[in-house]
Length: 299
Image (cartoon, rainbow, N blue to C red):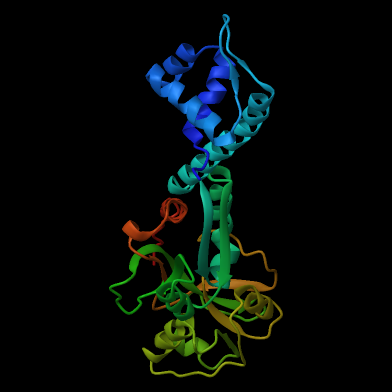
């Protein structure tokens, strides 16, 4: 048994709306015999006469009225389905899974997400709080679409990794500590310290800075939440070496001073994703938005 054809239903609706076979043929850019064939096949399919021919205007029968009502819904749904696919292909709708660290989420990502919401309100950005190593692993697994990760990272043939921004590392020190204008590893090594956890790139970066001067200090506490680390610094619990995501911006925490390092140290962040030819439009649009926030910081 043949199924209903959307083309035949569109022809039926056009005839009812326009009143004649010839007007429907012109509107649909079909030959009039094709229009007649559509109607005869529809009538054969439903075993009922659908149109009353003759007179100046073709009118629907009772069966025709019923089928036209349902046909309008089917055609609207079909048009909506095509439009939805088009929007997804164009990147105007969809879901993008993003992996990044707590520091990026707090200080850098809100502006990106606000820009995305204004430009692409139907794209849902799912944010996953992860370390760089786990983010890269999940990109390889396919459970993330984009990662904002500390660089450098091991090279990969399956992923693209481009520089996003560079932020100077600073010493975050309790305000009551008398501190020099620039803090060296020698000055900081014997102080109470707050580090990121050893599994993180930030820990490796910080310990490398100390090691370059021959020091290997131990921390009083290790954790991965940047704002909690700053709160502990402000409470006088210890000092931390952290990136300054907004150079020139006064820190919101009272009881804390932010001092440059000597030698200078810089944290680099890259954008990791699968090759452009295999990602969808929503992911591509988030990449373009992230690129608009690309920044190089001095130091």
